Amino acid sequence: MSVLKDLKFYATQPHTCSYLPERQAITLFMDPSTELDSGLYSHLSDIGFRRSGRHIYRPRCNGCNACIPARVAVKQFARRRTQKKNWNKNQDLVVTAHKAVNDEETYRLYRSYINTQHKDGDMYPATEEQFESFLVQCPDFCTFYKFRLQDELLAVAVTDRLKHGLSAIYTFYHPDYPRRSLGRYCILWQIEQTRKMGFDYLHLGYWIKDCQKMNYKIQYRPLEIYLNNRWVTLK
Image (cartoon, rainbow, N blue to C red):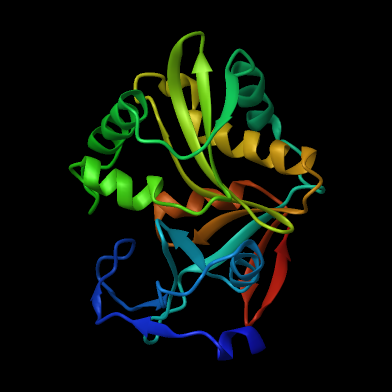
């Protein structure tokens, strides 16, 4: 925690929570002028912070601790039956690594995903400015993993590299392939990629028990969650 003493943070005014609309949320942001290197970012990730664009943040809501940082212990992870089916079904996809880009193909997939899958969210409708600030404006340790079926782009997993793992920032995918469960496959692929790179953890962001959109993370066990300033394992 000594690192935090030298950093400046700013809290937002209370606003409607994006995940639990009946509650008010407060977000703590690190001073955006702070130089963010891999070491600092890894430390902040290990104590529950996340990245959105160039902003490092963590919920700090009055009387609410619903947003719980979660990460997969990849060396102990074993695919369950349904996950094995999903993994096998998508082995025809080819994955390539790229620097963050705003090309027509990538933005078109992002726009289609947001406008189809998240019509009830605060990111709808998608805009190119939003795409730039949310995903393209990122540190050097961010990678766009692109998943293709022959020449067609089906999914993009935006992933950060930490000292001891990877961090799944955001995934968007083609809405016309529901039987492939591309969101699930991208997580399984990132788990495997983390393991191949010799790392210990894939950070999945916040697990929110009462929010269906975030509760899916509990499927990837053993899952470690950050409670009372320490990581504990859900098996």
